[in-house]
Image 1 (cartoon, rainbow, N blue to C red):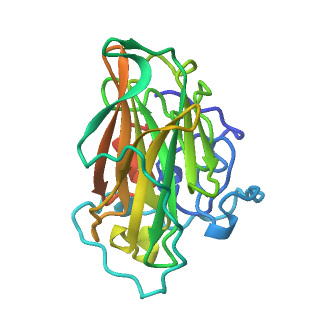
Image 2: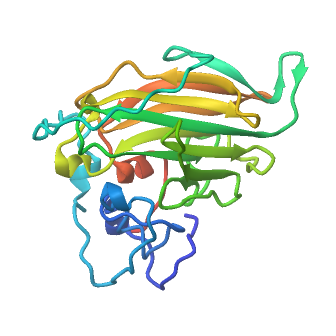
Image 3: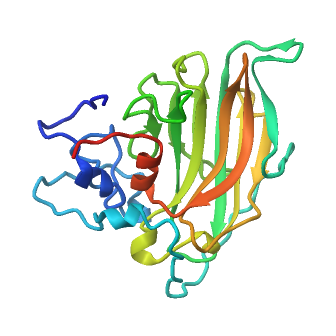
Amino acid sequence: MIDITMKSKSSMDQNSILSINNTRVQGALCARNIASLNQPPAARHASAPAYSPHARPQNTTAAHSTAVRTPVQAATPVSAPPARRLPVFAKPVQKGQKTPLPIGTTGQKSHSPGSLSACFGWNTLNAQCDLDVSAFLLGADGKVIGDSWFVFYGQTESPDRSCRFQTGDAADREIITIDFQKLHADVKKIVFVLTINEAFAKRLHFGMVKDAYIRILDAQRHECVSFQMTEYYSNVISMMIGEIYQYGESWKFNAVGNGVAKDLAGLCALYGVEVSD
């Protein structure tokens, strides 16, 4: 197990990782903030409140991250928020389609290592649906190469500083940039996941989401590929929308569009983020 630098002497344990969907903060992932990661939407990207070591985390039962097959009941109907206009997709692909990216060597055309931006957007049918993007940096075995190798609103940069999370702009809601010159050699795949905040507590699900997309832009903001989801499910709360993976000496994008009934804590366990008992 790879240790994460802590601001306190206490270690990250199972209870703290299972409470990853409670009160949200920004900053490096550590023992003091891993148990308090779900603020209300309005405070998502505000400065972190002072952490109280005596505060009791909420929604920390292990059942929350293991209810994979039980359909999620519908929440009390809430009016839909105003929809955001979608960008124009220049190079759309369908679910399951794989596309070369201008990084490394593709065919006979050589590209120098550079950077890409994974840009995300969505609309919802329920005002309580608050989505977030996370990126898991995986090795050849399909697991994170270390406990801190995932990027999201509470940990905005990977240890090698290659992947960075940022809030979006007028076109996209959230963005994760990837600098392939800094990317650790052991990282073979980056999986991008959309997760509904407090889905279990509020009985929310992806049947309340629409227009979800990912588009990959190069350093000049030209679109390399885009994928807009068309399938939404009422029994899942997280969607693996797409992934970038190494293929020989090049990199490709895979339009995934598959979901699971796991919150962020459950995704950490799925991708091998190891915690002590």
